[in-house]
Amino acid sequence: MDEIEKEKIAALPSQLLITTVCHPMEYAKVLIQLGYEPLPPRRSTTLFGRPAMILPNVFQYIKFIKKSDGFFGCYRGLSARVLGLIASSQLTSKVIFACGIDLPEINDPPNIITDEEPKLEDHYKLGRRDMIMHTASVVVSYPFHVVSVRMMASFIGKEEDYSSLLGAIVSIYRDDGILGFFHGIVPKLVGDLTCVAVTGILTYYVNKYLVKTKDLRFYTQPLLTFITSTITYPLVVVSTCMAVAGSSLRAGRPPLMPAYPSWQSCWRDLLKNKQHKRGSSLIFRYYIAPIAAMQ
Image (cartoon, rainbow, N blue to C red; front, side, top):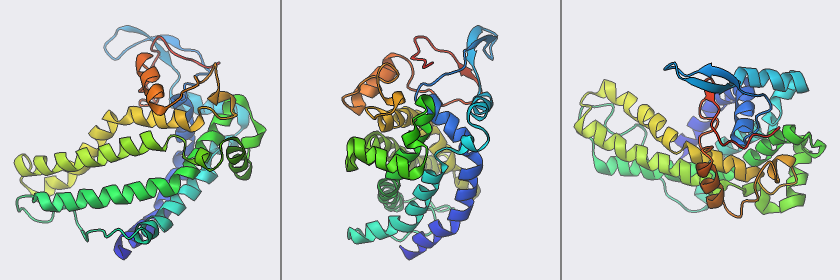
């Protein structure tokens, strides 16, 4: 477990750099996931030449945010995301150890460094370790995720209480108590753990029956992770909405956000209105009716 913790800490500087550079895009994506569309769609065509209404891409969205709040306004919520990354890298292994959970020691992905036939036992151990690590990481970092999402969502209603990290923390505690910092964690865990489990199973069978050389096996898991994360993406949208729903933010109350009694009702509502994939594409964004656009 010490080796795992060292690897996470070693990767932290690069993760922080990428998070900072890409934050404006993540900011715009969160607002899109919440259904906020301040810019009207325009007439265009699809890649196949069919007429369609297209929404502004992520760069036009960022330009709108910058015009409203300035350059540094594009980094609203970044401080909480950074703290979440640091907490995840520093505390995940400690939480697992404190719970008395024993992780299998696996230094390399199973059967990639050799041309031997993959072993189900090795993939089971890897999957078990990844799911435990991922669960602990989400639990540790999720309160900061909620703070970040609500800080970004405050752009919609211009709430001053969420203009600072401390103000956001106080506001969440005042509105919802400790549980407020975990709003939306269930769909987040369901989506992430499903992705990890399905990817592990598919990786075993693909490497066993389709990919026979070690060089190609390096690409199996990343490719399958991309595919499965695309399938479970709607749960990310549900988690983002539930992180804000019912809060004092304008973005979390009717008419901008329905009063969802549970994340399952949020899922059904998004699915019914064909909004369960919003934010999955940041360049080619087509207007889908009916849409709960927020003006």
